[in-house]
Image (cartoon, rainbow, N blue to C red):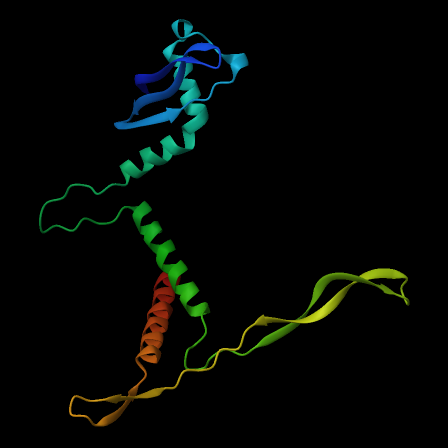
Length: 194
């Protein structure tokens, strides 16, 4: 890391030449770190070594700097026109994680054509009652809706054509739901083989 320059407050809270920001460059990435040095650790500007300032920057912004470096390494690589380069193993893994996560979440959603039933469970209310048989206080259980009912969509809907006649078609929302569910199942099958 190289210190490019400092933003210094000439006088603040009884202290002279207090460094507020360190502007730095590291592996081709430029950034700034806000310092907030405690009074008891204050060192006069003239007695500071670059190594000490760099250690403060790393202590405050290590994760951010490492993320910047990683992101810059993952940026698009130059390639000749007409050539599609193979993905790196990191990019392949990121792609796999993204699509498996999407497909799993998509299949967890209810089927629009079937709707969703209401589910009730007995859950603690937070109120305690005395159980005379055991001689202990127990949570009062109350019936609670844990999943709300959603009515199934109609499979067919009516539309009016340009000629003014009424026509039954498959509900576009149902069609889209089925297509997305099929794609999600295909993705999971594809990645389960690898």
